[in-house]
Image (cartoon, rainbow, N blue to C red):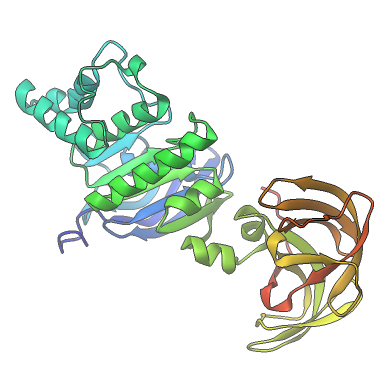
Length: 360
């Protein structure tokens, strides 16, 4: 907690949101700690933006209660919530200077022009734009405009900062730099932040915790490491990072090991599992290797495509395990399309999840 009082915490208790007969958010309870950066991640229509708008007060909950900083804000309008929002479009006034844009919310709230502009300059300094106050938004790059939008939000001294797809208008290289800057600002200020994105790499890069949404409810929540290394379903395994999902059958289960049959071979995995029967083997592309030699836990296949990317070679292959994507380090003589290989599986790196459809 930032001040020992729960300032900045966000709590949902049995919150439901409906639009007529459509349930946009099923009954949901969660808690976000003060100073934590939590990302809401998921495909379009999963409920993540609805959650953000409920925190902001732009939507009203159909059922349940919402608390911010320990205060029940369920029926409190957006105007009276200590929350600031950064939008995808930046929403800067083109005819105002950068400083006037940042000071706008302060002056509207009744602060004197001189004090508001002094705070605006402090805000610009926080985001690395000291000395840019006299410029117009059109004179800034996309990344600089996004930082102005962040400065405008943080000078209001919110308990919670909300970011709605803040980097989607930037190119890939600039996105990487700006997300690092946003994360640094958030950590420096100890600001509770809720970040919405559909980009799993972005979510993993900035988050203390990720809440993955699916079909209007939470599919799994945890640290980026937890979600990647311990997915609780085929959907999560497929959504967080690249993954090959291979059908298998669990023959024997134990607390720390289980025996599975995959593509005609029986393999012991150093992981526990709940029950016997159909399951999915999760194989990350960089945990597979290709060889010309057969052997245990090796499966025949042929190379469909080989793509050289300098630091790695990406292979699309087809064989007894189905269609697989493999990432290999560069070698002097890589495999080529049409080559026959064996896919070597490392049991200690394989994961098991329940057999389920993964469509969204």
